Length: 237
Ligand code: TMP
Ligand code: ASP
Figure: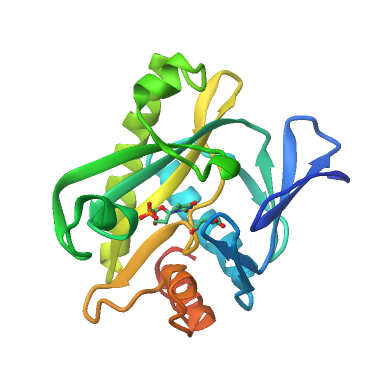
């Protein structure tokens, strides 16, 4: 596989074309941002951890019937993936109250939800990713009703698989964000699932093992990311 032209740089990744028009190369960076990119920093070796974690979790999901964009990890920071047309809707799945939900409804972080909550956000940094619902997504043409139903179905399966997996390594999967894309007409899972895009709390100590350490200036970000990859590799590698 030949690496082609540089296509796009996001906050945590770069994307390159390849000699196969259906395949792109993702390169994970150590750059960390929060609050729509207004807070900037780096987390040492974050790119390596996120590449590894996301690929191991995507393989686990594939085994459980979820199609993902993952094709092949090239090295510690680079992975080949199917080129998808991203649905511009971020899908947040919640099991425990935290973050923006805690603020929105005025309930303290850590309260377990009676059932899963799925939220949709319009993927637009300039607008600060506003929360939307299925009506907005469908009427604005960001996804069809059928695609939204499929996204909801997959998000529930992904949550079940990941919640059980993280529980087995003594981590509470508090919440996480998914992005889906269209590939050959099918809705498949894209982007990444990593400590950047999840809230992961140690089951015993409730210590945060995710990007909230960076968002909230808690320190020991790199150590937390390493701890997550260490526990995942102990089971999945
Ligand atoms: P929130 O509580 O800030 O809405 O975040 C919910 C989950 O989604 C949390 O695990 C972090 C993740 N997330 C992202 O991955 N990217 C984002 O831009 C935001 C706002 C949240
Ligand atoms: N990654 C997003 C940003 O850079 C938000 C976040 O994860 O907090 O703004």
